[in-house]
Every structure is written in structure tokens, then in C-alpha cells.
Image (cartoon, rainbow, N blue to C red):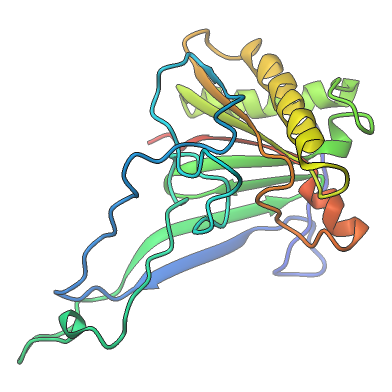
Length: 242
């Protein structure tokens, strides 16, 4: 297991970060859960790798990121379209004598990050996601894993095995330097390299979805080198064990 230092937002003296995010909503009798868009597909369908093939597609497959998504859609947990609500809609008004239902927690997310930000882990009710900066996995402009990368990937595989994951998503991303197409090629090759390493550690029956998103879905400002470094990454996610 790789030894890494962590930092905390709760205490300057500690070295572990755990951020607890609670999303609480009040339900009304007029509330209805949004339905996902019909028949969506995944960005980059012209160059997908899904092992095995034939599974369901994901939102936004054609022509860049889906505008309603804040992260790459993965069919796991909380990547859902933003729901637009008209506050003046008559259907939102409570009937005479009606009362709001008690608020409830819909999701809890724990975030743990290395002190240098090289690796980030997010755990929610529905999924676990690891985000690794490209610099800790690959040489510059390369899709060949370095020696240190394998131990990090082995740790992720161990967690996926612990949670009895049967499906794993591996998504690659770049910054916005260079052409979109070259970024798409590099991000896909890097995601594939991580997937191949994971497959040596996991059960042969585990299925993988592998995607290269180029500069789509940035998580930081591409206007600074610090932000671009965060955007050059590989994300590995799988459903949380029940």
C-alpha cells in the first residue's frame, strides 16, 4: 500500500482531509424526481472502449461535454442533469392545509486528498471515485505508466475488490493546451493504460468503460498552470459496496 500524507480542513495541526458535504432538501407533495434524458450517448462514441461492449450508453456521447453536467457522466450515483425549476409554477404551490415534508439527507460525500493534490478520493452513497493527476502516473506527453503509478493503481484495485465492484469506469482528461483531437487521443491512451493495469488486479468478470475526454469537464481553471495540472488527470470510479 502506498504511504501518502493527507491534509485536513478541520484542523491545521492534522494531516488528513475529510470534507463532509451534506445535501438536504425539503420535499413537497408537488415534487417529482427528474427523468433522465431519453436515449443519451457518451462523448467520444466514435472512439469508445467498453469492455465488454453492448452495455447502456451514457449522456452526452456526441460532440463534447453535455452542458447540463458538472462532471463526466458515468451512470453511477450523482452525475445527473441539473433540474430547472420555475419558482412561480402553480404546481409548486402547497394545497390548502398542506405542510412541507421533513428535510432529509439525499447524499453524503466524503473527500480525501493528498497534501499535494496528486490523488483525491470521493466516497458517496452511490459510488467511490479516485482522481489521479497525470504527473504521478505518466511522463510528460506520454501514456506509459511509470513505476510509482502501479502501486497507486494497485491500491485502487484493492478498494474496488473490497467493495465487490463488478463495473469500473476509467476516464482520462487533459488541459486545453494543444489541439482538442490530440488531447482526446492522449487522454484515451492514458485511460486505457490504467484500465489494463487494473485488469491485472481485478476479477476477469469485471467490466470496464474507458473514455478519453480531452479538455472536456475541467475541474480547475485552465488559465493557470496549477489549474491545468489538476485537469490533466485520470478518474477511476465504481459503485459503492452495499
